[in-house]
Length: 336
Ligand SMILES: NC(=O)c1ccc[n+]([C@@H]2O[C@H](COP(=O)([O-])OP(=O)(O)OC[C@H]3O[C@@H](n4cnc5c(N)ncnc54)[C@H](O)[C@@H]3O)[C@@H](O)[C@H]2O)c1
Image (cartoon, rainbow, N blue to C red; front, side, top):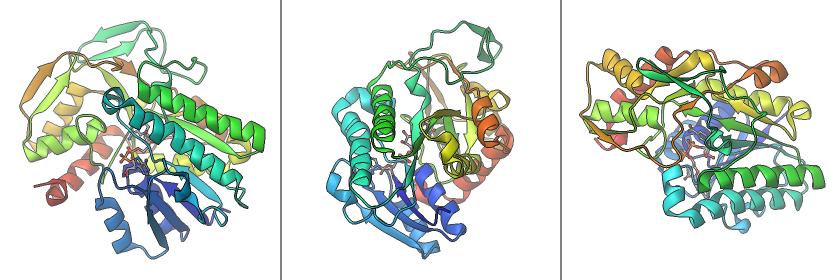
């Protein structure tokens, strides 16, 4: 059905896993990436797989798509400026990468012969502060009245990154309604896994694991009781494939995607789990809350479960154990 797949940001964490997942199934994969994060994942894919074409380029430049679209059946749109912190320091970079980049992709697809579908990496940050009633319970916060956030909450922004992702969603919706370009949006919570080069600004589960194993200090902003639902990367791959396969049902819609209420963890709980698995603990530095940090974010994943029959199968302990093993065996890739 989808034999030829284009992945923007395919050298990144999520994009490179989608690439490997697709290549293992015999698909032809084209990756566009400017390698602004790391070249580790593209080298890994090139060393291990044949049906891969790599274009080093920037989606802020519409010409990057020239000659690539006509033969494509499916696009996973992952390239983006990914950090809230960077978006506050450099909103132009954020806007141009995310909003202009998405426009360039849609417009190039419109001008091509292809009728490819797009699955887009959106984010829970499109819901802004949420300001829901919250309970403090031991080592974590919880929502007081609900289990998780569903897709009926209105879109609001509290940082440039949230804003540029909302604009990206609107661009996709506009091209769908006006020109019939099929797209669906995954509003993702926290995705984690192997080959994730997490740092203090983005990818906190990977960052805490890497820092602990490499003996680096960890700064906790706020009180460490903030919780997230976390989703292991292999479950994320399956979710994206399901959204694409069911595009006639999922087009024009958004789906919250995360580990859901069964897979939540607070910052301190994660540090304790990593300690349990490695016997190590980093020195902790305490600092104030950062702008745009939500105390609680848990996805309600009922909609994606009901509409495409997807749900996560890898629990928090199993996923973090896999990540710990990967970091332990790949210290040199992580700068040690
Ligand atoms: N990891 C998460 O928990 C999470 C959560 C919500 C949303 N997302 C979204 O998922 C997508 C993938 O995130 P990730 O965690 O894999 O991040 P990542 O940084 O590992 O991957 C992003 C990739 O995009 C590339 N890129 C950035 N700007 C580009 C540009 N202008 N042109 C071409 N390539 C460019 C980078 O080089 C990188 O390889 C992003 O859109 C991100 O906003 C991720």
